[in-house]
Amino acid sequence: MANVGAPTACAECGRLLPPQHGKGRRRRYCDATCRSAARRRRGAPAARADGSVKASLTAAERHVSLDAGAGRPGGAGPVASRVRESAAQLADELGRRGPGSPLAAMVAARELLAATGDALQQAVDQARAAGHSWREIGEVLGTTRQAAFQRFGRPVDPRTGAPMSRDVPAGAADRAAAILTSLTEGRWEDARHDFDARMRRGADADRLASGWAHMAGMVGRFESMGEPFAHRAGDHTVVEIPLNFEAGTAVGRVIFAEDGRVTGLWLRPGHGSGTVPPWS
View: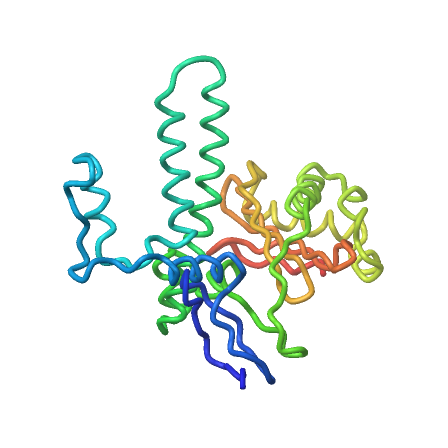
Protein backbone atom coordinates (compact mmCIF):
# COMPACT_ATOMS: atom_id res chain seq x y z
CA MET A 1 0.00 0.00 0.00
CA ALA A 2 1.21 3.51 -0.76
CA ASN A 3 -0.35 5.39 2.18
CA VAL A 4 2.60 7.58 3.19
CA GLY A 5 1.61 10.54 5.35
CA ALA A 6 5.02 11.60 6.67
CA PRO A 7 7.48 13.44 4.41
CA THR A 8 9.87 11.15 2.53
CA ALA A 9 12.83 12.03 0.35
CA CYS A 10 13.81 11.08 -3.19
CA ALA A 11 16.26 8.15 -3.04
CA GLU A 12 18.50 9.79 -5.64
CA CYS A 13 18.60 13.58 -5.10
CA GLY A 14 17.05 13.93 -1.62
CA ARG A 15 14.21 16.28 -2.54
CA LEU A 16 11.04 16.03 -0.46
CA LEU A 17 8.29 13.85 -1.97
CA PRO A 18 4.56 14.62 -1.54
CA PRO A 19 2.41 12.38 0.67
CA GLN A 20 0.77 9.38 -1.01
CA HIS A 21 -2.72 8.10 -0.35
CA GLY A 22 -4.52 5.03 -1.62
CA LYS A 23 -3.28 1.92 -3.38
CA GLY A 24 -0.18 1.67 -5.52
CA ARG A 25 3.57 1.28 -5.33
CA ARG A 26 5.38 3.54 -2.91
CA ARG A 27 7.10 6.41 -4.73
CA ARG A 28 10.92 6.45 -4.43
CA TYR A 29 12.00 9.13 -6.91
CA CYS A 30 10.80 12.68 -7.61
CA ASP A 31 10.89 12.39 -11.42
CA ALA A 32 12.13 10.36 -14.39
CA THR A 33 15.54 12.06 -14.33
CA CYS A 34 16.32 10.80 -10.84
CA ARG A 35 14.89 7.37 -11.66
CA SER A 36 17.18 7.10 -14.69
CA ALA A 37 20.20 8.34 -12.71
CA ALA A 38 19.58 5.69 -10.07
CA ARG A 39 19.29 3.01 -12.75
CA ARG A 40 22.60 4.06 -14.31
CA ARG A 41 24.29 4.05 -10.94
CA ARG A 42 23.05 0.52 -10.18
CA GLY A 43 24.34 -0.66 -13.56
CA ALA A 44 27.79 0.90 -13.18
CA PRO A 45 30.80 -1.44 -12.65
CA ALA A 46 31.48 -2.18 -9.02
CA ALA A 47 34.31 -0.25 -7.39
CA ARG A 48 37.40 -1.97 -6.05
CA ALA A 49 36.95 -3.54 -2.65
CA ASP A 50 39.16 -0.95 -0.99
CA GLY A 51 37.25 1.89 -2.69
CA SER A 52 40.39 3.18 -4.40
CA VAL A 53 41.30 3.90 -8.01
CA LYS A 54 44.54 2.77 -9.62
CA ALA A 55 46.47 6.04 -9.48
CA SER A 56 48.97 5.08 -12.16
CA LEU A 57 46.16 5.17 -14.74
CA THR A 58 45.08 8.67 -13.71
CA ALA A 59 46.86 11.90 -14.55
CA ALA A 60 48.32 13.70 -11.53
CA GLU A 61 46.13 16.78 -12.02
CA ARG A 62 43.01 14.60 -11.67
CA HIS A 63 43.91 13.15 -8.27
CA VAL A 64 42.32 16.07 -6.44
CA SER A 65 39.01 15.37 -8.17
CA LEU A 66 39.20 11.73 -7.16
CA ASP A 67 39.87 12.69 -3.56
CA ALA A 68 36.97 15.14 -3.54
CA GLY A 69 34.59 12.47 -4.78
CA ALA A 70 35.67 9.78 -2.32
CA GLY A 71 33.00 8.42 -0.03
CA ARG A 72 30.05 9.60 -2.22
CA PRO A 73 28.61 6.57 -3.98
CA GLY A 74 27.18 7.39 -7.38
CA GLY A 75 28.74 10.86 -7.50
CA ALA A 76 26.85 14.13 -7.21
CA GLY A 77 23.14 14.34 -7.88
CA PRO A 78 21.73 16.26 -10.85
CA VAL A 79 21.24 19.49 -8.89
CA ALA A 80 24.77 19.49 -7.51
CA SER A 81 26.19 18.69 -10.94
CA ARG A 82 24.27 21.57 -12.50
CA VAL A 83 25.59 24.01 -9.87
CA ARG A 84 29.16 22.82 -10.42
CA GLU A 85 28.92 23.05 -14.21
CA SER A 86 27.19 26.46 -14.14
CA ALA A 87 29.79 27.87 -11.74
CA ALA A 88 32.63 26.62 -13.93
CA GLN A 89 31.02 28.13 -17.04
CA LEU A 90 30.58 31.49 -15.34
CA ALA A 91 34.20 31.47 -14.14
CA ASP A 92 35.36 30.77 -17.70
CA GLU A 93 33.23 33.55 -19.19
CA LEU A 94 34.34 36.12 -16.60
CA GLY A 95 37.96 35.28 -17.35
CA ARG A 96 37.65 35.82 -21.10
CA ARG A 97 38.30 39.03 -22.97
CA GLY A 98 36.91 40.28 -26.22
CA PRO A 99 33.60 41.40 -27.77
CA GLY A 100 30.54 39.54 -26.65
CA SER A 101 32.06 38.03 -23.51
CA PRO A 102 30.11 40.24 -21.05
CA LEU A 103 26.80 39.05 -22.52
CA ALA A 104 27.94 35.43 -22.38
CA ALA A 105 28.91 35.98 -18.74
CA MET A 106 25.43 37.34 -18.05
CA VAL A 107 23.85 34.22 -19.56
CA ALA A 108 26.14 32.02 -17.46
CA ALA A 109 25.36 34.04 -14.32
CA ARG A 110 21.64 33.68 -14.95
CA GLU A 111 22.04 29.92 -15.31
CA LEU A 112 24.04 29.72 -12.08
CA LEU A 113 21.38 31.77 -10.28
CA ALA A 114 18.69 29.31 -11.42
CA ALA A 115 20.87 26.35 -10.45
CA THR A 116 21.56 27.69 -6.96
CA GLY A 117 17.86 28.37 -6.53
CA ASP A 118 17.16 24.69 -7.24
CA ALA A 119 19.97 23.76 -4.86
CA LEU A 120 18.45 25.88 -2.09
CA GLN A 121 15.08 24.22 -2.67
CA GLN A 122 16.72 20.79 -2.44
CA ALA A 123 18.54 21.78 0.76
CA VAL A 124 15.27 22.94 2.33
CA ASP A 125 13.54 19.71 1.24
CA GLN A 126 16.33 17.68 2.83
CA ALA A 127 16.10 19.72 6.02
CA ARG A 128 12.37 19.05 6.21
CA ALA A 129 12.89 15.33 5.54
CA ALA A 130 15.42 15.32 8.39
CA GLY A 131 12.77 16.72 10.75
CA HIS A 132 13.77 20.39 10.96
CA SER A 133 10.92 22.84 11.56
CA TRP A 134 9.97 25.79 9.37
CA ARG A 135 11.01 28.03 12.25
CA GLU A 136 14.55 26.62 12.12
CA ILE A 137 14.67 26.94 8.35
CA GLY A 138 13.37 30.51 8.52
CA GLU A 139 16.06 31.42 11.04
CA VAL A 140 18.80 30.09 8.74
CA LEU A 141 17.33 32.02 5.80
CA GLY A 142 16.86 35.20 7.85
CA THR A 143 13.09 35.27 7.49
CA THR A 144 9.92 34.08 9.24
CA ARG A 145 8.69 30.51 9.19
CA GLN A 146 5.65 31.59 7.18
CA ALA A 147 7.75 33.35 4.55
CA ALA A 148 10.05 30.32 4.33
CA PHE A 149 7.07 28.01 3.86
CA GLN A 150 5.50 30.27 1.24
CA ARG A 151 8.68 30.18 -0.80
CA PHE A 152 9.88 26.61 -0.32
CA GLY A 153 6.96 24.61 1.10
CA ARG A 154 5.05 21.93 -0.77
CA PRO A 155 1.50 22.35 0.58
CA VAL A 156 -1.13 19.68 0.06
CA ASP A 157 -4.68 20.66 -0.90
CA PRO A 158 -6.91 19.44 1.96
CA ARG A 159 -9.81 19.15 -0.49
CA THR A 160 -8.10 16.61 -2.73
CA GLY A 161 -5.01 15.38 -0.91
CA ALA A 162 -2.93 16.33 -3.97
CA PRO A 163 0.07 18.71 -3.93
CA MET A 164 -0.91 22.29 -4.66
CA SER A 165 0.47 24.01 -7.73
CA ARG A 166 3.38 26.38 -7.10
CA ASP A 167 3.43 27.75 -10.63
CA VAL A 168 3.11 31.54 -10.76
CA PRO A 169 1.37 32.92 -13.86
CA ALA A 170 3.73 34.71 -16.22
CA GLY A 171 3.70 38.48 -15.76
CA ALA A 172 2.04 38.47 -12.32
CA ALA A 173 4.91 40.37 -10.68
CA ASP A 174 4.98 42.99 -13.44
CA ARG A 175 1.22 43.48 -13.26
CA ALA A 176 1.36 43.96 -9.50
CA ALA A 177 4.19 46.50 -9.86
CA ALA A 178 2.14 48.40 -12.46
CA ILE A 179 -0.85 48.58 -10.09
CA LEU A 180 1.25 49.95 -7.25
CA THR A 181 2.96 52.39 -9.62
CA SER A 182 -0.47 53.70 -10.58
CA LEU A 183 -1.18 54.30 -6.88
CA THR A 184 2.09 56.16 -6.35
CA GLU A 185 1.29 58.40 -9.34
CA GLY A 186 -2.33 59.05 -8.35
CA ARG A 187 -3.81 57.22 -11.34
CA TRP A 188 -6.63 55.62 -9.39
CA GLU A 189 -8.71 54.34 -12.31
CA ASP A 190 -5.66 52.74 -13.90
CA ALA A 191 -5.01 50.92 -10.61
CA ARG A 192 -8.61 49.62 -10.63
CA HIS A 193 -8.51 48.39 -14.23
CA ASP A 194 -8.19 44.65 -13.44
CA PHE A 195 -10.22 44.59 -10.20
CA ASP A 196 -12.86 41.88 -9.97
CA ALA A 197 -16.50 42.89 -9.40
CA ARG A 198 -16.28 42.77 -5.59
CA MET A 199 -13.12 44.88 -5.55
CA ARG A 200 -14.63 47.45 -7.92
CA ARG A 201 -17.63 47.83 -5.63
CA GLY A 202 -15.56 48.13 -2.45
CA ALA A 203 -12.57 50.16 -3.65
CA ASP A 204 -13.54 53.06 -5.87
CA ALA A 205 -11.15 55.85 -6.88
CA ASP A 206 -12.01 57.96 -3.83
CA ARG A 207 -11.24 55.12 -1.42
CA LEU A 208 -7.92 54.39 -3.11
CA ALA A 209 -6.97 58.06 -2.92
CA SER A 210 -7.98 58.24 0.73
CA GLY A 211 -5.98 55.15 1.65
CA TRP A 212 -2.87 56.41 -0.14
CA ALA A 213 -3.20 59.80 1.56
CA HIS A 214 -3.46 58.04 4.91
CA MET A 215 -0.21 56.20 4.17
CA ALA A 216 1.54 59.45 3.18
CA GLY A 217 0.38 61.02 6.44
CA MET A 218 2.15 58.29 8.42
CA VAL A 219 5.39 57.69 6.50
CA GLY A 220 5.74 60.65 4.15
CA ARG A 221 6.56 60.86 0.47
CA PHE A 222 6.94 57.70 -1.61
CA GLU A 223 10.54 57.15 -2.75
CA SER A 224 11.13 53.77 -4.35
CA MET A 225 9.86 50.25 -4.98
CA GLY A 226 11.76 47.03 -4.24
CA GLU A 227 11.89 43.67 -5.99
CA PRO A 228 8.54 41.84 -6.25
CA PHE A 229 8.13 38.39 -4.70
CA ALA A 230 5.36 36.26 -6.26
CA HIS A 231 4.08 32.98 -4.85
CA ARG A 232 1.03 30.77 -4.84
CA ALA A 233 -1.38 30.66 -1.92
CA GLY A 234 -4.01 28.01 -2.57
CA ASP A 235 -6.04 29.07 -5.60
CA HIS A 236 -4.53 32.57 -5.63
CA THR A 237 -1.30 34.21 -6.72
CA VAL A 238 0.14 36.68 -4.21
CA VAL A 239 2.71 39.32 -5.14
CA GLU A 240 4.42 41.31 -2.39
CA ILE A 241 6.54 44.39 -3.17
CA PRO A 242 8.61 46.41 -0.66
CA LEU A 243 7.82 50.14 -0.70
CA ASN A 244 10.17 52.79 0.65
CA PHE A 245 8.95 56.15 1.95
CA GLU A 246 10.84 59.11 3.36
CA ALA A 247 9.99 58.18 6.95
CA GLY A 248 9.21 54.48 6.85
CA THR A 249 8.60 51.34 4.82
CA ALA A 250 5.63 49.26 3.74
CA VAL A 251 4.76 46.19 1.71
CA GLY A 252 2.24 46.34 -1.10
CA ARG A 253 0.35 43.08 -1.60
CA VAL A 254 -1.67 42.32 -4.73
CA ILE A 255 -3.74 39.11 -4.87
CA PHE A 256 -4.80 37.62 -8.20
CA ALA A 257 -7.60 35.08 -8.65
CA GLU A 258 -7.31 32.13 -11.03
CA ASP A 259 -8.90 34.18 -13.83
CA GLY A 260 -6.22 36.88 -13.49
CA ARG A 261 -8.48 39.46 -11.88
CA VAL A 262 -7.32 41.38 -8.80
CA THR A 263 -9.21 40.07 -5.78
CA GLY A 264 -7.19 41.78 -3.05
CA LEU A 265 -5.00 44.85 -2.54
CA TRP A 266 -3.25 45.70 0.72
CA LEU A 267 -0.71 48.14 2.08
CA ARG A 268 1.06 46.73 5.13
CA PRO A 269 3.23 49.31 6.90
CA GLY A 270 6.63 48.30 8.24
CA HIS A 271 7.37 47.92 11.95
CA GLY A 272 6.38 50.97 13.91
CA SER A 273 4.61 52.66 11.00
CA GLY A 274 1.08 52.20 12.26
CA THR A 275 -1.72 50.46 10.34
CA VAL A 276 -3.60 51.01 7.11
CA PRO A 277 -6.86 49.16 6.45
CA PRO A 278 -6.92 46.89 3.37
CA TRP A 279 -8.81 47.79 0.23
CA SER A 280 -9.87 44.17 -0.27
